[in-house]
Length: 167
Image (cartoon, rainbow, N blue to C red):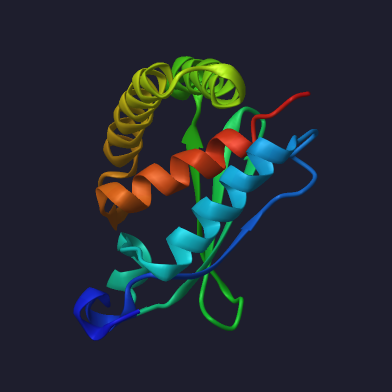
């Protein structure tokens, strides 16, 4: 990452883990989405947990995502894996966007295999629209808890979706 994209004080995610016990099933397409989202997230992100920063933490952070009792558990640790804080976000407002995202991704993966380039582009535009709306919702839910940017929220939403795969 270049100096021009590094947030001041290293307020970023340096490592991210998904709770493997939460993920019941994956296919090759979803596994590829997960790998890309994690790679892109680590390469460039903005992530400042407000309470941890107020207590003097300057990052970088290790983030673990899990689903517990229908809520997203975000465990934020320092670079030595000392837990700084845990955030629980209700996922009720994400159910529909997650369902829509899975449906449009399924259509997209099917289209890649047999549709025309124009059809693929149309489905991809719809997929990006669903993804963007979900990222905006995530930014809204993180307000006051974590300062982040839109690209980081998009990648985090992808990973939240991976945690919801039920086979």
